[in-house]
Image (cartoon, rainbow over all chains, first blue to last red; front, side):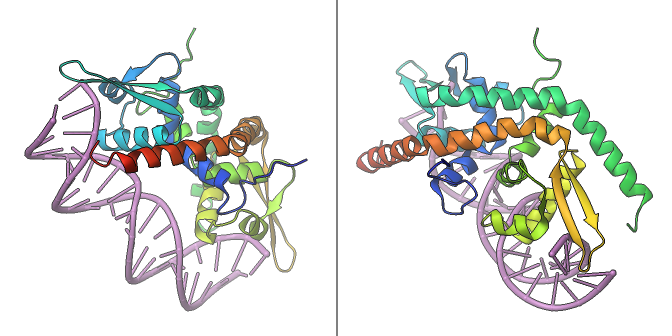
Length: 126
Length: 126
DNA sequence: CAGCATCCCGAATGATACTG
DNA sequence: CAGTATCATTCGGGATGCTG
């Protein structure tokens, strides 16, 4: 039998969840946390190209969704560690599969893009 | 050994591919095409909430990436079918896993959100 | 170190109208 | 049916500066 929820439906909660996860930064953050807890600025350094603002926002959303936990240590200056929750762990395998697909098939994708562009260039009106 | 490409790196082609796929509409389109070719307006109807413009744009990107094919039939009026390519097929399993995760764990996510919001409401200053 | 507040701009989106 | 074109709008995200 089909699942009770259907991602094709607008307003379906599962769709909301999918929308949240269908975000490159969220995926990269989850992937980065898979092996160990990581601190804020370490994430900022490791995930190239993310801004402080977006990192902060995305972490907050992921924490709200219960996918990761935020631990504050009263050092001076303060230390904050982000780690996957069990729920986050249950997702990280899929995220990895995704990332690996991207890494393994990107040559094919780049080739397809080149062919598409070449064809489009030679058929300007079509 | 680690893969030659690293999604954490900015400017890495794999990262570009991941960015492309980390899009809710792209994922929903790929999922919808997994069993059979589908026509433009059928996709528009099935994927609730997508606009004609965004559907058109997303289809074009996915076609350019070689993930799906576009077939035009000279009926009156014209018929256009979108179908997964082999490359698209190689990805759809992962997409399904993602969608199923969203459907199966959304109750947990919704609960986590409620708890987070309740806690935030009772600690306005913290 | 780990953020938040503010300003600001460009890209993405929706709405509408038109075409083969 | 299957789109393209244009316009108006918003709003995500970068840059900067400040705080505990």
